[in-house]
Length: 267
Image (cartoon, rainbow, N blue to C red):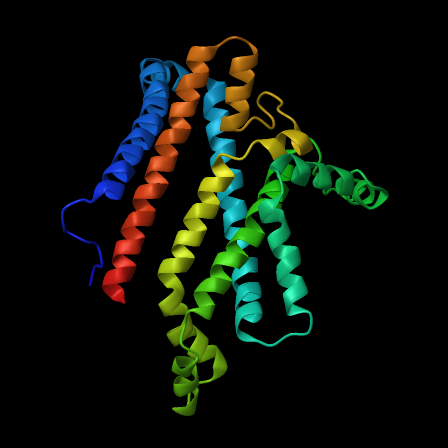
């Protein structure tokens, strides 16, 4: 049942309405500037091999890093949320620290680690990260893995612990209780976390610039392409590329809302 009031507005609510309309107008005007400026040049941008490369590299690195975040993050989140571990508070504090740091700082951290003797030794073994497309995946992991763990742990903590315990008293193993009770209850929240991580990854630029740079047709993602176009005075193509990112974000938002609606119907 909704708690939203349907009574006539009082003065504070009228003031809040004016502020809300002002905020909506501010956001809409800025987004419309990208749409109006980029739409006429969208076909030209997509016709360029460089733009298609940046789009492919963004989609590939973001999807790979998001899958890794899911595979690594969900077991970590379950353990932190559902088990008493020594040092659990410290572990969660360390994992949440990257969430509050500027991306440039995280990129500098990665650059320092991978430029160290250990990082150079790994490079000699074939694991090249600095100024390499694989470094984009490393950036996304540092930025989004703590984010996914944080959201997934909150989802697991909201599950009534009596439910999996009841399943176990009825004969289910701990793994079966997790698979058939806990996990289905968390699917809507986990899906939202995955989509948000993907959306954050597709638009990340600061840490990527620090670790891998922006080299045309090598480490050029969509945000990097915007940066290069602005640097060379190609503002129309920059707006068209920004429009591509906007359309991707709208698609993710639509899928997220649909997943949330389906999850609510399921629950």
